[in-house]
Image (cartoon, rainbow, N blue to C red; front, side):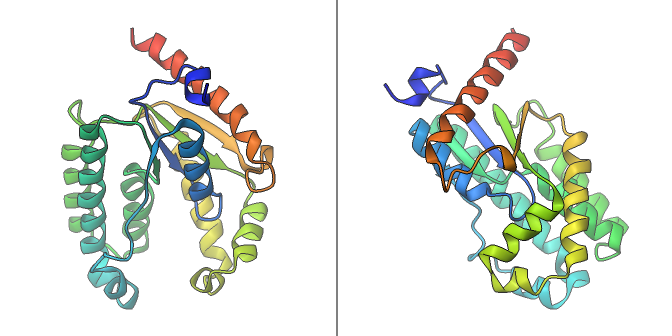
Length: 222
C-alpha cells in the first residue's frame, strides 16, 4: 500500500506548494509527487519571452511579464483539473498578484493604471467560483536567517548577486500575504521541522498532516 492509499488521500487531489526563494519548494514538490504517485507541475521560466527584457527595464516590462505569468498559470491550472487532478504544483497563481505585482506597484515599477488593470483581470479570472482552486496550499516558512543561509549554500549566480535587503523584503511580503490568504485551505510547514534531503522518510509525517487537513476541510465543506 502506498502513502496515498494508507492516508486515504483522493487520487484527484491538487496540492500547490508556496513560499519564498530558498525554502525548498521544488524538493517538496518532487518528494510529495513520488510519495503520492502524483504528477508534478513546475513553472516554465525558459520559454518566457519577457524575462530578459524585464531585467533590463523593470518599469517598461513589469506589466507584460505579470500578464504572461497570469495567462500561463491560468492555462496550467485548467490543464491540471481537466486532466483529473493528482498533481503537486510548484508555486501558486496567487503569489503573482499578492506578492510580485503588488511589489512592482509599491516600488513604482508598475503604474497605478497597469496595476489596476492587472488586478481586475486576476480577480475576474481567478477569484471566482468557476476557477478550479487547489484542494490545499502548503506554505513553506522559516526564519529569514535560515532561508538566506540556504540561498547562499545552493550558490545560484543570480541569487548570489541579489542584495540581502531584497530577500528580507521578500520574506516579509510572503508572510504578510499568507497571513491574509483565504482562496483555499493552507497547511503551514516550518522548514526546520524536516529535512527531506537527509531523511526522505520524513515525507510520511507530512503526508499524514496533509491527510488530516484534507479531511478537516472536506468535513467543513459538507
